[in-house]
Image 1 (spheres, rainbow, N blue to C red):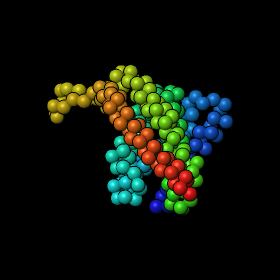
Image 2: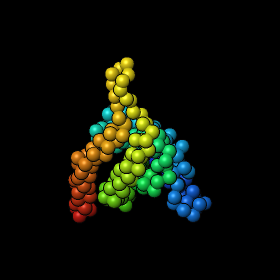
Image 3: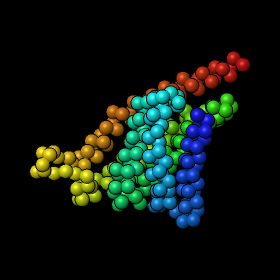
Length: 213
């Protein structure tokens, strides 16, 4: 488990370093996605294993929450950003990439130090506090990127299947993306308030433990 958490932390540090180096080289934050496109696709696709890890109890996280988070990120990475080249230069892509990167560095730092039985309070605090900003930031980037992709999807008919065909089946990817955006309305508040509840529980317990000492 310790090795797995360490390597997950390392892969997101690679993306963070790639973003910083590209920014320093270009002097601009525009189109930084291209500097980390390949590692992001590789690492984010590999994150599908996290669902299995949660199911097996290797990682102490909710299977449902992890599955939603990982699948939504894989979808954004491949079915939107990779598939619709026109959105790759959008600032909204950088918005969710930065949010994902900071979130995962904090999360895997938390796991790594917890497994070493030496968890600094700062990392615990960051794990249960910075999501207050990072989660809406990531969701905003995701929604803005999907929205930016809509006209290109509609124009090209990307992934859409029209009638007539031998399977008598139709699929409109443009409509599907709109439904995906709408699905954030009931799902995001539930996840966000769940995390706020976890924050109150964990940090209040830490404060009580400090007072007891």
